[in-house]
Length: 139
Image 1 (tube, rainbow, N blue to C red):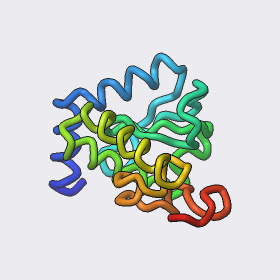
Image 2: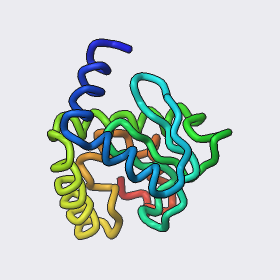
Image 3: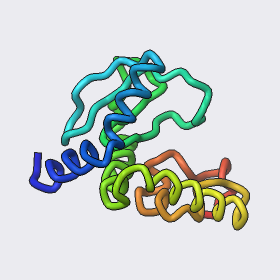
Image 4: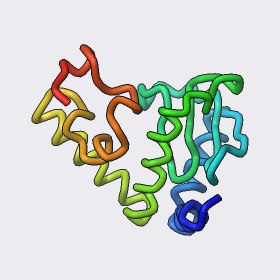
């Protein structure tokens, strides 16, 4: 790991976003494993929300996919890793409030939660699975 990745890992541990992610993984029956660059991969997330194929809580990336394919898409993992860094910059759980405010703004502007969401745009919309006809091409 790079020094920056170690700092992010420690920051997200201290700000409690990674412990919350691990708790959600455990409660949802997801299987946790060590991932690259200080991330943890939680495979088999099955709760109904959020609807995404993957989402991040601190340094824990939760995937709907099973253990065999969770974390295998390098572009999606890089997108989720950027969200992990955003948690650290936002001092942990305040990221959630800021993220949902940006999602609301995006819905007002475009009708979807990602196209004008600052955090999704910074993480890379195409890598996160946003774009194409699902979002009306208004990225």
